[in-house]
Image (cartoon, rainbow, N blue to C red):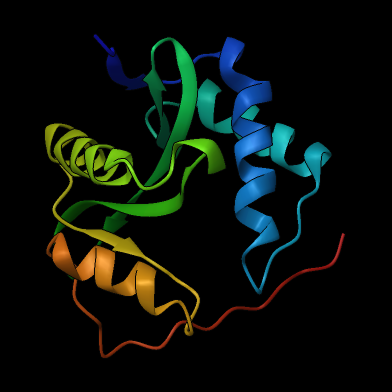
Length: 152
């Protein structure tokens, strides 16, 4: 019998999280893996649970996926909202419904934290991801994401 658990990450999960982020950023158009940056960010998230959480999906004791939720206060919503920043299932675990399990857990977790909305970004050409999120109640927004990056 297989065992599945989805729980908030701890410091002992940092290396596994960075390996998953490396996989994620290797398939995204706008980002590149940088273990130093990822370790710094993961450390910050884990040390400030009021500003965000990382959930770890384990299958039979092995880290098989992760999702990060970052919290903001929305004046439009009148309270706390979540940004689903990173979500990935490890390559060897894909196609088994684990993404659905992890996303459902993230949605439930955000609700339990008092969030009124979850927002996420996908690559514009990633139709598969967009269909996956739409299947779980997400819809396209009339808003267009824009960013300005400050160099180090």
